[in-house]
Length: 516
Image (cartoon, rainbow, N blue to C red; front, side):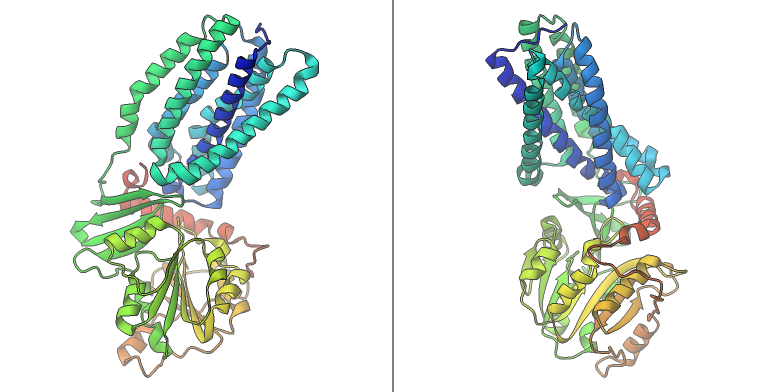
């Protein structure tokens, strides 16, 4: 059995080890969403899966780690850390295969099983560290409470620091694959240092060799793991011309030259599309939005929530001379709009979360365009009574809120009905247009205001009026739910849509472009 006595140096080293492994747990958990989101989206289901898998893995690790600590004879903590390092390195290498294998399981089960297979091995090993460390740090029974409390406190502090380090520093500089590879290499180095100490302090003759062997195996795999992520084209003919991983998603600009098409994606969602040759938008719903200023004259100021590729901002400024402020949560999206889609600012460009930023804006907007879409879903917190009331407070007396919502047009759609009913709680009038008449999966453009909207405006020609008339859509909102900050099941109501959209994107772009 292990000699449980530790000198001051050994105890300090143990706490450093606990700190580093605690930080590693949170880094892996947070990076888990970044590995899965390009395929399954960044929905509540993905987050729930990652959190559940983390708890399952840690609980399993605590149980097995305690048994291991009580029975360890020739190996110790160093081997546990080395195994955690190896499993961490394998994550970016096997991600594509695991996601493709779980694809038939659907959004919810697929996300959960993917997370379980990809992250539970390394997280289980890291969970084994704490009970093993408690065993090492406890020299007598009456000190076990103090030792265990200190160890879990240090581990938790490490998790906090790891979270902040990842979010504030690592993510803005490196991609998730590179961070995972770096974390695996660092854990290998830690395992060897711990193994050297274990051999000297506890005479564990087998402590170092397994760590060195696993380190050699892991480092030999690094070139293959790095090259596994270098895929620039897929069978669909799309070519990635720009890619940036931000805190909010993997933002890519891709060209399909055979169809004169350039698209902007964020994880598993297309948020912009244009012709390569002339830069004109290829999204029909934006043509509807482009006619809104003609429906109600004397517009001067516009706010766009959700920049996308920036086409609407350009059109509204170019055709109507409007001053357009934009609000976009992801700086990578804003940069891509400027660098690859010709977005030119005519007003204030704000990068931040809408619910926070709109509280600090001055009102008087004649038009607010609400166009937020990601991974087959919309950010539900921006579609509640409270959020819409905040936006209404920024509108001028006769201002219009234009809201884009993706849904099915055929049959009863609970999500669509709920958005319509929620808008009805905030605005006296609403008119709905559909992007592509006759198609089931569609963009719905809600125009909401406190004054009736007349599409037979004198400023529209007969062709434009007829074009809009053919796209008017009646939403039955009688059975819809009023969405609030307290009760908002929108994501649950939209599961079928998220599944359909993900399947459409996989078939269109190809799995190789989504999973890297």
